[in-house]
Image (tube, rainbow, N blue to C red):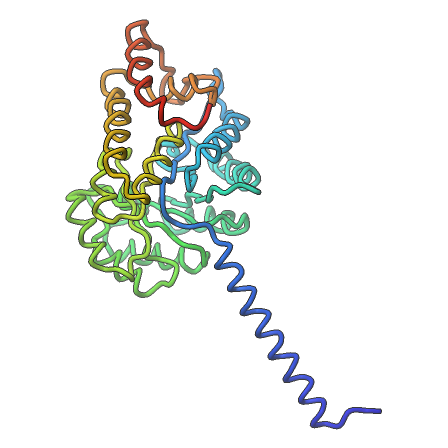
Length: 331
């Protein structure tokens, strides 16, 4: 029996409602499935072969090491990745390698999309968006002369991606640091902003200014190789974004201890880890030695130099590293 016009309209309305419900449910599922934007986010070092080509196999091994250690996120390519030495083709290929490497893993993927200007940033951002990372991160453009230039750049980025955008405060134009007022205005105006990697002076004053903007500011991260992380956790920051992948399990342990309120143990772990962090001043490349020692990288090569170590330097690295062994979870 044919349906009346009213019945047809009823069927269409029901279908529309059903589609809307399914769409809402899909959005809710996406939100519930999203990886938390908090904790220990490791900026991956870019590994190189002896001939200074990118070692893609070691980059994947680094992802697996960081994930096995329990860190909440990986970030690439940023300053600790040697991003300034990478070609466009290497950056695009690395994004693809990492997007594949994180499949099925708990660790969130944050892709760096900064460029010297809007056009270059958009090139990387479109590719990143197609790979569906958990978030993106961007330094300000180096080809800028005002806060208005920064504003236009980040508004353009917001038009490319709907994923969380972490604004890194360093790395932009010389002597032009994004103001906290600009960062907070972007957070108010753009739904996927409100995340910051803060490492510009006066860093503590800026962090406290961000904290006063809760809940508009959704994610406030320290940096500076994690040297101030103990204090930052106690202040209530959301985590750290740092080039410490060789200590991913230790960083993850510190975040867990913080969340559990085990402050005395946290202080002990942080103190022992800081001995390793500070050793880089006396033994350049100590971190890369640890990366190789832990079976992640095959070399201690960067595009700037190849690190070598005296017997005395090796003995000091291994002496200090022994203090961390009770807190390691990765081989």
